[in-house]
Image 1: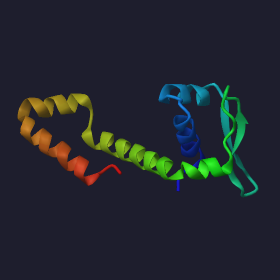
Image 2: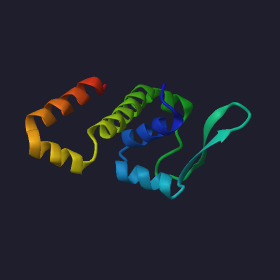
Image 3: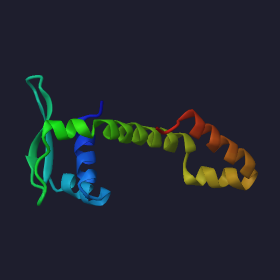
Image 4: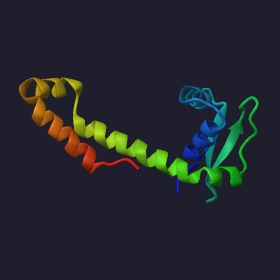
Length: 115
């Protein structure tokens, strides 16, 4: 089950917003999520998206599966990036043995598959 951020993100994508537009909406506080200290968890505090109504719980639940996939793939991307090392290290590795570099990257990808 995806968190609220990922569900809202998927809801926005399903309604035609690009990744850069979504990032801007969160950065400019057009959309603000908040966590309630009484145990209810995360909720939408602010929704100011022009031309798009605030999602209902049913709409958020409807995108949960894709939001969970996006969350898991994002986590996999971060894991892979750490394992790859810096681009400088990779260039040195390519220079010395490109086949070993290819094999290492394939091993990282197979150890960290995307959904």
